Image (cartoon, rainbow, N blue to C red; front, side, top):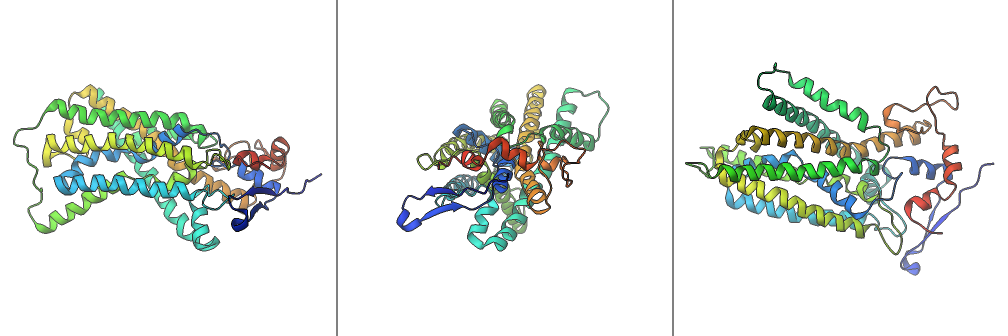
Length: 399
């Protein structure tokens, strides 16, 4: 017998002014939300926030910061680095606060906040295309960068080997994600994300440490490389864009916070913000030494990737490139999980597919009802397992 939905009451801090929020979704809708990758697990701790944010923010772009400094110069370069750090930390704090800005409701996805601000339809059209462009675009960049770093590692450790096209290394990098993409939720990739965060700190340390070992180069110059005003202006904006790109990761903040439990007494913003602060300390430790020391040592002769400039010792540069590969694997998954969540939401809620025991975006869905050749996990079974309190338990809401 189908049970009728039970309203979930959440007492606002000021009942007189805020009133009482009631969850009017059906049991099936709650069970589906409890199945989707972003909201299926809400057991994350504050340190999950720390390494997820480090993985999302610190990318291979950190290795291009010395080149960006060469395009900007000492004064503007340092100013842009510091201001970007402050501004992005402040904007991230705003997003953490807005996750539960409406009493009793959590904005688990970026587009949900957009819908609250601009309306159900307009908010969706404003946010989702931009978010998808960023997340899919970044994953494409990571796919290519991962292949390039893998090829660089191969060329360094095997000088006499036959040259292999970059395409094959990109395919090798992509093959890892055929396995990792089977993981069901953002919390389930926490180990991969932790390894990626450690790798980002490692290859950043190798970059500035090896630079210090090389020492300031003879006849080093710090002036602008371009001899024309137009070229200098173009390079300035290029360097500005490189630094701004290095401070990304905000488009997955809502989804990261959605993995944390939240109650009236202990809202999710507290552990989330604690993790963000730790993450931004790590970001500063990664970015500032690489940018400033790399530029100080090589001046405007530094390459777009400081590892290319270093070249020696080969074993250390090879190790750094492998660290980059491992980091990009984790970053790829952090950016891909919200995309998987969007795909599965559309398939299950809009196209009426049945949820399976595996994530929907991996092809293990069927529109059939009960006679599928795939291993199905119907909503009714999910409800039987979790009961009508699935949503309350997942959100940390008490009756």
